Length: 232
Ligand code: NAD
Image 1: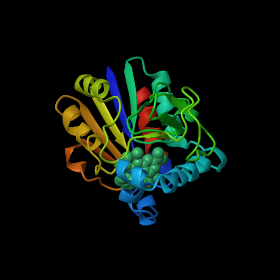
Image 2: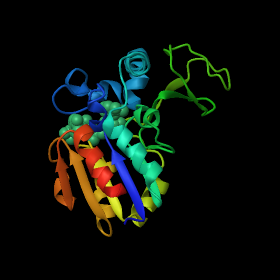
Image 3: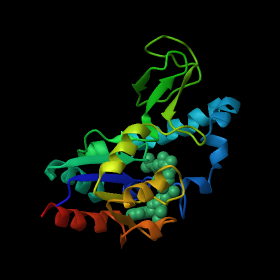
């Protein structure tokens, strides 16, 4: 039995819930260029466009027919039923892990339902639209709010704690992540030095050769039986 499990999830785990992945068929970047929307430079140049993009994505998450799928629920069940250390790290900015019951999720790329004030640094939950003249609820500054997500070129969150947990785990499971975006794509090499490593994806990722075990198919179909086995 394992002692410490680290799970890394990417956009693929939310695809069956109806949220677009970034890359691949139907991916967000087929309609938008990443550098026009998800960089600090894009926000400085076209703040209204960037806020509108995030307002639309937030609306889709809170008012669309978006629900967690069996893969999200399976990870919540693993956390509840596992007696060792369990850590869920996600690159996703959605809240589907939490809605499925997962606790203490490390959102390394931030959260769609949070805004941050460039004045006082406060981060707060938001579900509605944010306009260019929206007020910070903590310091009342006007026009300094930005999505609390990590844009290209910015430092991911929680990296110290993630590095420590990767260094200590004996099972590393990556679900629905393309292996294109670093540092997350490098986690398998860190963990693989001492832990069993498993990839769950629709197709082999960019870093598939680093995994000891590979399970291909939809996460909602492949992950639940794998987790049932782990919990036995
Ligand atoms: P990605 O879009 O680069 O890759 C998605 C991966 O998921 C691909 O390898 C694809 O084969 C796989 N996949 C697609 N459908 C699947 C399914 N049903 N089951 C299993 N695997 C499936 O995603 P990534 O690796 O997470 O890229 C990183 C960036 O994407 C992150 O910065 C993240 O913040 C962002 N992102 C997040 C969301 C979200 O919050 N839901 C959505 C899009 C992008």
